[in-house]
Structures are given as C-alpha cells and as structure tokens.
Amino acid sequence: MTSTDTRRIPASVTEAIEIRRSIRKFVQQPIPEADLRELVRLAGLAPTAFNVQPTRFIVITDPQMKAKLQEVSYNQAQVTSAPAVFVVYSDMEDVMTNAEETIHPGMGADQVATRAAGLRANFQNQDVAQRGQWALAQANITFGFLMLAATGLGYSSSPMLGFQPDKVRELLGLPEHVQFAGILPVGIAAEEGFPHHRHSVERITKFI
Image 1 (cartoon, rainbow, N blue to C red):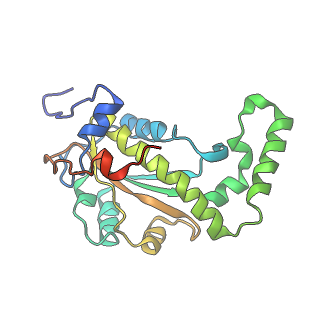
Image 2: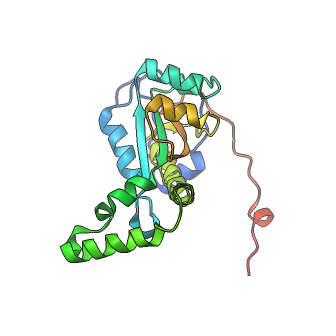
Image 3: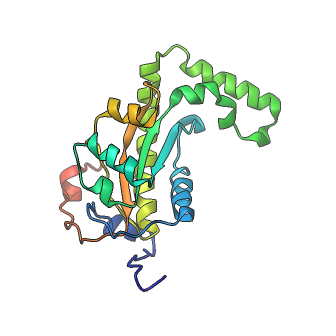
C-alpha cells in the first residue's frame, strides 16, 4: 500500500460484517481494475438455486456516465463521489437462452444437454416477469456478497435502491426484462459513517 492508501483490510468475514458502514463520501482514488474484477469474482461465488447464476454486473468508472447515472438516481451524491459504481441486476432470459453454461462441463456433453433442458422445462411455464422475480431473489444474495467482498478488500460502499429503473435500463442499454438488485458505489471511505443501530437478537428471533 502507498502512504495515501487508507484502506483497512479485515481479518475475517465476521470483522467485515461488523465494520461495514454505508458510506457516501469517498477518497478520490481510482480502484485498480484487478480489484474490480476480484470483487465481481467473489460476488459471483454466491450460491444460486440450480446454479443458474442470473446476476449480471455493470461496473462504471467513467465520470460522464456516473454523472448521468446520478441524474436518474435522484441526484444522490455518492454515485459521482465513488470511483466505481456497480449496477447489479438479474437476467433470467439470458439464462434460459444459455442454460448449458450453468451446467458443470465435467458432467459430459449428454448430461449438460439433459440438465439444461430440465432447467428450461422448470421455468418455461412462467412468464418473463415471473422468471425475472425469481432470478432477482438470487441476485439479491449476490448483491450482499458484493458488499462484503468490498469490505473484505478494504473498500467501503453504499447500497442503493433509490433510482428510476426504466431510466437506468435506457441509460445502460439493458432490455426491459432485467430486474435490479441495486446500485453499489464503491471506494475508499472519506468519512466514518454512522455507528450500527440494530435490533437485538431477542427482538427479531424465536428459537424453537
């Protein structure tokens, strides 16, 4: 690390969970492409039912594109403050078209074909919207992994649902059927963030 690199590398997943804060002001320091790729790789390890892997990512570092995204995100400042912004969405229609890609190649060609056909059969009676909602539940898990991966690499983030989906689709050239898990600005924190205020285990849990 250089002297200007203020990242703190957590020692464990537990620490990453405990120190994560929603940060809206970031140090104006680019994120190396290798780190951006590693964040996608780690998030992509999230589990998905049938291993469908419907989550897709757009990583925005271009200042002009971030400014346009901010406009359709109710002008939230963290979009342009962060050196990188991840747009995370699900695309189940891509999965349906390319179902063979979800099957482990070690199973052999016959099993790949059989299992891909079975996957398509599981969803063919659902309409596009139903499939999209199902895939979104998978993408939401991946979104959580992405936040923890960012913290694990010493970065901070700010999960966002405050944006106009139709305008984001138009801006990024995405098809109408995709569903957004969220937008995640990522960078080195330039503020402390608020301390956690969470319900107790007793408030939210029943042990049976």
